[in-house]
Image 1 (cartoon, rainbow, N blue to C red):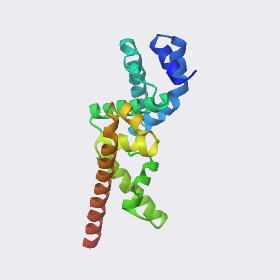
Image 2: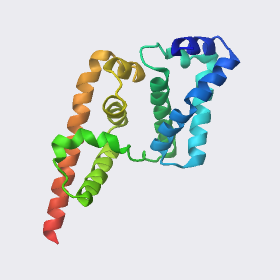
Image 3: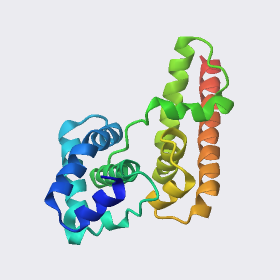
Length: 194
């Protein structure tokens, strides 16, 4: 059964379809939430439970926003990340660092890290900078640059016009580069004082 048919059957109230949706997407959604929450298993379980309940409530209103322009798994991952970020905001906590692949975004800003120790330090700097970005910027970079979502998919997942994605992405990359540059200058100044 394809994604559109699975969503349609879930919306129609087919319990077997709901079981299939959960069974076939739980692992990827769990990993996405786990990355945002940093592996706190009780929090991950709470977010997953809330997510699937919200998908079903109000006659599957949230699932109805899936329009089939992306893969259902991509859409669910974005919805799960937003739910995890909302959970953290309610708890007054920051998101955990994004996964390493997003660090490829900074190759032109960071240059060649050199040794493995330099690469590890650069990785830490990038994760720190990503944590300081606005949630939309961080999510957009993750969707487009790491997950490979198209602009159309990102627009759908962020409930935004597709023509907003390119400028938002450009600004998100600029903000990330600026944060990395500021951190590099701060680190250089601190080491010269020692």
